[in-house]
Length: 464
Image 1 (cartoon, rainbow, N blue to C red):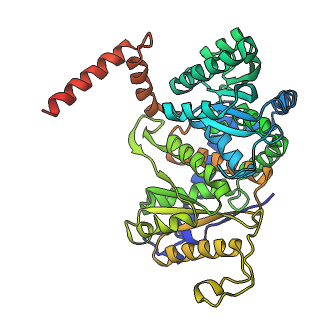
Image 2 (cartoon, rainbow, N blue to C red):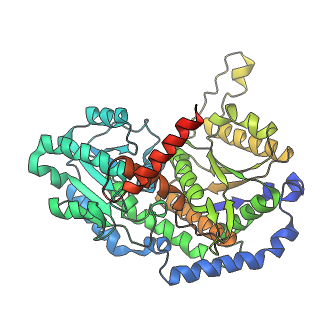
Image 3 (cartoon, rainbow, N blue to C red):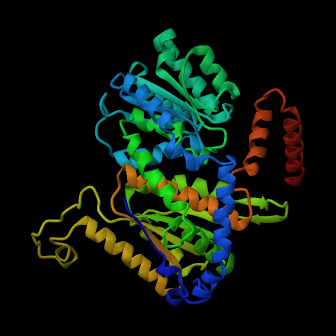
């Protein structure tokens, strides 16, 4: 398993001192980086945060595999009901390893499809119910709190749909992944007899892809979860190393911290040159945004910090976003995601047709063109003083993918330490949740309904 980090185009020698990091700045901040590692290691050892331990949970892996094996071939669709970290990780894994949606192989009992209900748009849920067969569907409902409004609502719809078709047998085709012994989803699962798997209490949703939240859907789709955990375990060992050259998560965190804090690059563009990694870009977007967008430091000082993550797809977005990136505000840093070897090179015929726009491509491949496009974009940005870097995977298999995801989770944790913010809470999301509960008349949230009504009155007055 090999992931290479090319940071050359982040350096001042390539993009100028106003936009790139100097070696002096890197050297002067090395103690800060090592302290970030030590602080996070201490928090992990105290069991405050648990994602680094997930790859080593052989008991969970065995239980998930046994459950998936017992259900195998009894369904052709896995319907995942979840939102945010309870859905994005599973979707990213499926896209990366089984192919980008909707271009996977025809679904069957031995190649089930994944349908994700991660929004309460009634047209989405209605369309899903129209195309799924309840007798051939296995439902995985994932919610750490067990009370997420969107997940609960969608699950009630799907549960009723399953019940009408299967009666009491519907419970056998539902698996719940949630906090152990806590929340109403856990209570419902116990009452109705669903299979259940726990999400550790010290693992937040956006860090849970290698917990049962991600492993259960992956195993049900036929993905080798032992190989996933093997790759993540290898990366975890690297991420505890104090040497920057050995620990690319720590090095990446330090360089991105300096680019952001000292060079004013407040937007981070994740730029995969692979449709298989497109789902991972959306997973990264949540991880980076929710973890680092914070109003206060751990000491309570107001900072309102955050680096806005953007997902761009190469080469598609060279024709939709790069004009802005090249000539617009120089407030961005770019991370290209590159595969050294694709599943198929996409060979182009050697036969020439007598037209210049086509003939220079004869005998080449789509893989070669894709890499030429990425290299050209990186060079063009650097020559225009736009800092960028590249993360390169030898290939895209279970081990490389899980290592890649684990790398980003460690890099995010280290960045939180460098910023002195809590990368594992999300207080900014909670107000909207409470207003929603109030508007939907959930008991105990009446004050939020009243506060919302005051807001509405203010809006009406402001609008004349």
